[in-house]
Each structure stands twice: as structure tokens, then as C-alpha cells.
Length: 371
Length: 254
Ligand code: SF4
Ligand code: SF4
Ligand code: SF4
Ligand code: SF4
Image (spheres, rainbow over the protein chains, first blue to last red):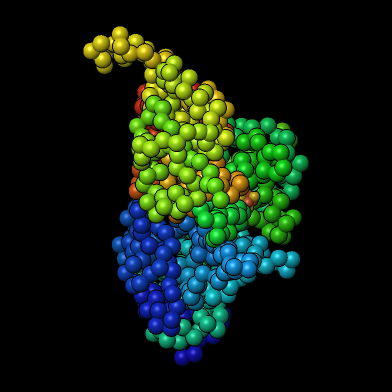
């Protein structure tokens, strides 16, 4: 059988797919249980996947729980996102060494072998695409990002369950992705006729699928996958209105910003957990001799006071101004800048806010009245 | 070429910050090549006279004698850098600031009459002009080297002013408050330790003192939700940086 993009097949387990990726020379990164959460690390074996695990998420709350014992994908998104692989938290940009007649720069890039992201959720595909538009948009290209991105294969997992913090359905980013992947899996009926719908998204994906024991997907299989997606969407209680971006305009002096700033720790967790936030700082260092120097890029956040430091001081001294920057950038000015929302509805900023501040609640409340 | 002269001074402290300097084994030789270590009693009994280009000051001011001595150090120093929680916030001994010192001395010493001490343990900056401060209990080795390196290179040192939470996220540490319900001082604490406690599943103790604009009210409210009593919450603010303004206020039991 020869698979082609747009087609769908059925496989009985995701394990042979992970083995096929490794056999084809891909480094496989996927979900692993680590320290009470799911993080995205290198997978050496299909058994590394957190099989039978699920999660309980609410504002400011995350616990791993037992899922259906045989399920492979009952959990949803955890604290980390794929951005740590494409846009690392710390990256050396270059180093330089003093020489007899000047200096020598070393800007060799860190190794990034061809890499398969295994288990990318629909909102995460959308988040990667939002970052694509930030780091490679015609005006500006971050060549390190594009190099990593070009060497990355995406194996998606369609969501059959939502956490209480998820609101992708209202952002049109999930719980089902139609494109943006090389391969996509939907887990069907883990307690009965357990199987996986395999959608082919690209020629690379098709070539991998050809090495697997496939059977054709029936109408029943496809209907079961549609039902999984619609029941995941139906579980979502949080949402953002489609016109939130224009409704947040002109609300700069709304008293709600002060109210939320009183609860907010300005700790920056929301921005750093967010899979689309892209801000960074650049640090230069040198050694004691002064002969060697390095330039590093590190994740930064608009919640840091120094983030808005220009000559003479920080522009956003007021914590309310910093919360306003985050929320309006994500939901409103991102549209002006990049033509889409900066939010994909993954819910990370809600779950991983230590005091459980909910971006959907704050945005709706500030957008609702004229304040 | 003459090397800048470095002096290390001790006030009321445990010596841990000075030991951090001694602990910089890999860099110590390089350091000795670029600066002349002119006074560092933990390392050598040899003392060279001032003035000094760089003075590292450890410890807090707890006696009249300290108060006079720090002025003298200031006069002899071109750049004065206060290192550690004692020198920057009064240290753990600043717990006396919230208590009755006489009651303490009467309990601890057989002959309390011999004890001459001030009512409060205070930071170096409360007494003399300080050019730079390095937080931490103890200070971080890499920050100490960075500070000296930057001072020698006449550039601004990279001392983070962000919260401990930023260190967690950069290190990929899952938040212990969210994933385990453990009360953590990280959101109000300045980064700098290298994410020591959250990385091993413990809440941050606040060793590096309050972050700029620390919202302690919001954190206090969250600690109550996590089940801490007022007293337990107050104790969280009353560790090594009890005397730092934001923590001193937050530590006053409601
Ligand atoms: S909204 Fe929450 S996570 Fe974000 S800065 Fe405020 S307290 Fe931290
Ligand atoms: S703003 Fe919040 S919900 Fe939206 S993408 Fe970022 S972390 Fe996810
Ligand atoms: S919300 Fe803040 S940290 Fe995130 S991209 Fe915008 S300015 Fe940067
Ligand atoms: S563990 Fe503590 S320091 Fe780390 S993110 Fe959570 S609250 Fe912040």
C-alpha cells in the first residue's frame, strides 16, 4: 500500500510508529512523565510515553492522575511546550576570543539533528505556526529558529479530552487539527476496539506510514475520530469571544487593570509558560582575563521591570501596566503585528499561574463594560 | 601593570559569603592574577594597607563598633560592594528587629552585662554609601565572579532582577505551588541561586530577598489558601532577609 497526504489509515498501536521514526534516523521528542508533570523530552522507547496517565487542571492547579489504563494519550498539555526545543530558554549566540591581532568570533550553531516532535496537540501546532510568523515573517528571519524548524517533523495527537483550562475550540485552534502536521493520530476506544486513526499530512509522513502495518480507515473509524473531537470540544467551559481583539482596544485606562494587578504576582510564569510568547534578553559576559567573551540570549518577559528599561528607567513601572501589556499583546495587538491572535487557547497561563488568574475571565471583564 | 587591590571585610555574619569566594577554586588563581588580594582574613593573615579599589563587605551592623568600622572601610574603598543577606538586609540576626533584644541577651548569655549591642541588625547601605549589592544567603559563586569581572571590565554586571519563577521556567522546573501545592516564596523573591530549591521539589526560601515590586499581599493570600496559618506565613518572610523592607512588612502577622 502506498500512503499519500490527505489519506487516513488505522494502526493498532503508536509503538511501531516511534520505532519507525527512530529507524529512519529521527531524534524523537515526546511526552514523558517527570516530577509529577508531563514534559517534552527525548523518547528512547515507546514505553517512555506516560501510558495510562491523565491530568486534573484548574486555575493555579495541576496534578497527574490515573487515566484509562491502556490509553496512550489521556493527558493533555503540561507546563512545557515545544518552544523550548525551537526557541531554547538559553542559547549562546556567539563567543569571541582575543587574538594577537584582534579577535576571533565563533558562531557555530548548536547541533539540532533531524527531530520528530511526537504528540503535538492541535493548539500546539497553532502555537508553532504563530511563532513561525514571529521568527520568519519576510521582514525578519531568526535563522537559528528556521534551521530547527526545517529539521522538525510533526506527529500530532488529536485531543479526545479537554482539561478544564482548555479553550482552543473558541480560538479555532483545536481540539482537532486539519493540517500543520506530517502525521496525526487519534486514539479510538481505549477500553474496547482500541486503535488509532492515522492521518497523513505530508510526503515525509506518507513515507513513514508506508513502513507500518496499515489498514484502510472505514467510515466508522472516521466517524469515531470526529466524535472524539466533538466531545473534547463539548467539555470546554472556558472561551474567548471571537471579537475580543477589537473590544480590548481603547481600554488602556480601564480600572480592571488595577484590580487584576492587586492579585497578580508579576512573576512572569504566564508569559514563560505560554507557547507563543517570544521575548528574550541578550547578555554579554567575559571572563576574568578579558580575553574571552560570550553573548547569550535568554527568555525574558514583559512582566520583568527591566524588560521596558530604556534610558533613564523602566517605562512600565506600574504592575497594572505590565499585566495590561501581556493581556493586550496576546489578545489584541498581536493581530495588528502578526495578523492573528497571540493566544491559541492552551490554558497554560491559567493552570500555571500560582494564584490562578484566568486570562479569559480578565479579558471578558475588561472588554465587557466601558470602565 | 599594577593590579587593583581587593579587600574582604567581615561584620556580623557566619562567614558563608566569604567562603563562597574561597570556594571559587577554578577562578581563584585567575582572580589573584588580576587583582591584588590585600585583605582577606579567611584566606591569609597578611594585611596590606589601604586604600582599596574594591571592598567586599560581608555581614550586618549590630554594634556601635561596627558602625564606626564600616565608615572607616568606606573611606578607604573606591568601590564598596555589600555581599550577602546580612550585608544587604541585616541577615537572620535581623529577627531581633521584631523582638526585645534585652530578653534575648538575658536568655542567651550568662553575663548579659558584657554584651553591647544595637537594637537592630541593619544593612551596610543603612550606614554608608554602597556602590553595589549582591544578594543571597550565601551569595552565588557565579554572581560573585561576575560582579568582580564586570567591575574590573568597567561594565554593568548581569545580576538578575527577575523573580525566582523566571529561573524555574528557564530551567524547565515544574512549579511546586501549582503541581504539588507547596507554598513557595519564589514569586516575591529575586532570582540568583540557580533555581536550587524548586528544582528538587521544594518551595523557595527567599534567600535572595524581595524582587522589585514584590506583591507579598497576593502571595500571603495564596499561602492562606494553601492552608498556612498567619504565623506560618509570617515565618516564611522571616528568614534570612527578614529585615528587607518588603519582607519585614509582610512578616507582620495580620
Ligand atoms: S498573571 Fe499569574 S502567572 Fe502571570 S505574572 Fe501574574 S501571577 Fe504570575
Ligand atoms: S495566552 Fe495562555 S491560553 Fe493563550 S496560548 Fe498563551 S498560555 Fe495558552
Ligand atoms: S505577552 Fe509579553 S512576553 Fe509575551 S510576547 Fe508579548 S511582550 Fe513578549
Ligand atoms: S516553584 Fe516557586 S519559584 Fe518556581 S514557578 Fe513556582 S512559585 Fe515560582
